[in-house]
Length: 154
Image (cartoon, helix red, strand yellow):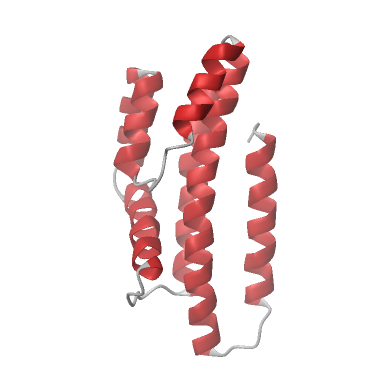
């Protein structure tokens, strides 16, 4: 990953996963941590997508164009896979198609599940997310971000 801010965010999140894994094996405590990590992973996806495209705009366009992109990406929220694909398509129809094709199936499901669970958690609803589940979704989200990074930083 060539985007420094995404790497830094990943390192922080990785350290939280390690901390939680080292806690005593109390199912209720781990369930609370899994919900917290779900919220963090959703935010990580959202912020990383923004950062990758903002960095791309800064590297490839005039300052006023990259400022416009950064302002508009500030409104990018709820990074369900279709929203990410639409954003990629707005940069390049080929990127949008490639991202959609490459993420169809378990990568799309992982992103959408994380975001849906985060929304349910934020609204006080029960979710059935485990520490192992969120760790797997996080790994799949990283793959999606890698595809975007390859578009923006060939």
